[in-house]
Image (cartoon, rainbow, N blue to C red; front, side):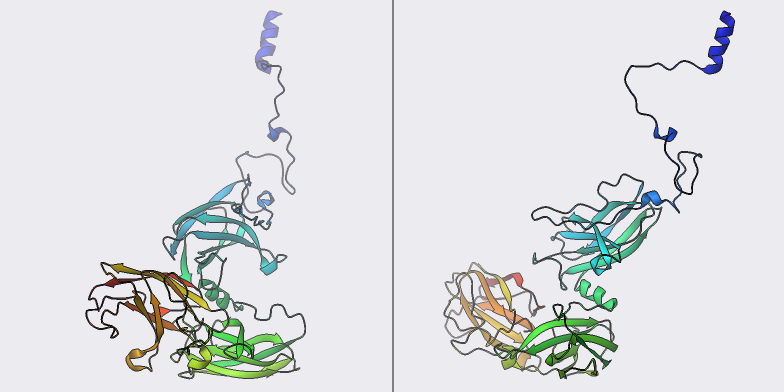
Length: 442
């Protein structure tokens, strides 16, 4: 009998030792089979082609004041693959923001936000994405002005397909104006000049010819009698190149000034750029045909209209500001136009005893003697300075000196020129300029 019991124990295995505590069951013993699948096979077998369990809901990230948004796929517990790369270019000392997006026809703009990554400076990045996630767009930018992403910020974008293998060696090269180029390459408007219009539209259509290969900008203005320039800038459309175009404007708008040009130096239209300006009357027609022929030299600078000639004493606009400046000094520009920019920096005197420093401002002008035109003077002391300038002023040259003999800048006077000369004004504030005065440096 004892032998029979021993044989039964050998056949059935050893009895399980218990602790009296409830233990969770291994889910492999009760999990349901996936739809269309079957139970069985190795628990390590994972099918990556039809694996519905890797779908991830794309939700917009809430940008709470004072809090940084979460990273992409935060909280995802499924199988992942690494997505790694390098951010290059831009300002080596400036932080980088990265946006991760996925195509989503139901979201505004056709994409939903997956999350953000913040870097202290350009360099390596790495995230984990769900296996087989699919299409994903990575955008990186720097925000020097702290005003959110804009057309002129250093920017790069890359679209990838996340499969079941790591995505390695990605490179995003930050470039000033990169967002503008990406939008233009996609045939999109860089900004919607009439985005608040909710009435009927007139479609402007035609052909842009001449010029060179590359982007074509269409700057739009409407009359503004109270503006110093007589008109108001309302927005820009950017095309990937010359050729056929279409542009929607409010029906019955009336007079519309359109400047078509290729901005080769990134400083706004000037006589060296392929250019044409047309004044259009937008009526009640559903469509109007307007052709442009771009020609170098067609742009004619109007110093008075642009506020780029020295202003008479007491004229409004352009009054200098900043530490040590004479608040009663005449303004540099006769008119600032809409939304002027601020240029600021500091004058450093190395071993120079000076209470008053002359800051001379010139406008780069190939038609003027010496290639530049004198705009005016600021009186300052060593330390910070700032002044305002029209957004479309072009390029400036800034020089500082101490007029020891009261006869203007002459050899022997302490002198310093900005290393930034010529300083291209690209439509946004410029700061951090330094002019260093050295004795007899002229």
